[in-house]
Length: 343
Image (cartoon, rainbow, N blue to C red):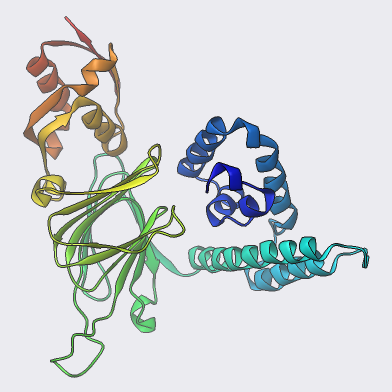
């Protein structure tokens, strides 16, 4: 959205903005805080748009069964108006209907999501440093990395729906299921991984999805996948081939693709971590998200040091001393907080 086109109407009807107001996440908070810092002159517009959306928001205690009807009631109030005044300008009435209709779509989708999570679901969670192997009803296999959560409907097999919701990181081995009795047919039942920033759709392949608070990544080992970003409304699905690495970082608000060795980036599923010229700052982030450590550097430039090596994941406590020796650093540790400084 170009700055000169930022208006109350456009902002309030923007799906990404609506998601931030109605269902904020750390990534959305960071995005809109940065947006406002870059455009302080639009603060009043942002606040007014936020207030408009909140004025249409449903009561928090509305039951899932009555959610859709409540949304329609909100739309009716907005369009008809409680005053019934005939002097209301047609433009204002049309705009508010547009916003309400947009909110209807968003909130109806949220209702389905809400019902899904309150319904009969299978849920798996891993602690720091723990991985878990999961066999899905269709025979697909998932390795869930540490500090991650996976959910799917318990009646998935009966409904013939292959959808999972992921928070964190997982490696997928998806089984192909034909939609036809004809063995020659190429029609396969899709498998969809939902995360906060993207939907990953596959037919039968092996791939890794990582979805953390400030960034998301997809690594394709075999087969083909299609990734649909959620952060940019007009971004077309991104097709990936084996060896492709697709990443999204919230602070940059941009999707980037490059070729990698997928076996290195998915080595964790084999209880091994392989580092190929990885900056210490990235290693520190991995240790924080996956093992619960916090790493601090005496100087910012230390985070740019690159490290090559490997270690067993069940010996992760040996990694920091290994890094300290490699770069001739001092290490101070208190529980799971570690400070690295130059000698």
